[in-house]
Length: 32
Image 1 (tube, rainbow, N blue to C red):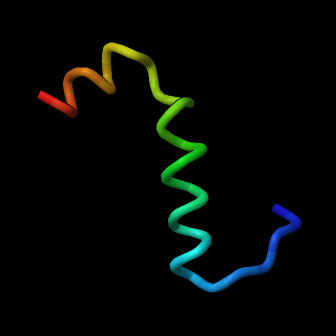
Image 2 (image 1 turned 90 degrees about the vertical axis):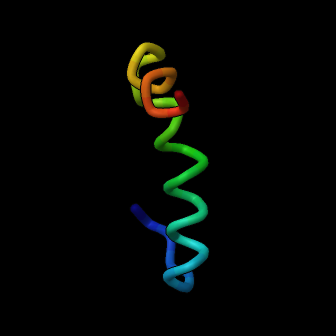
Image 3 (image 1 turned 45 degrees about the vertical axis):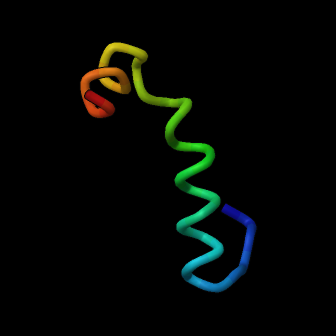
């Protein structure tokens, strides 16, 4: 990625973006 930020900012960004990339069934299983 072309972004430079602190580690915590990167992790927050990854959390936001990555969750939507997982299949819905996997998301529901992990939330249960």
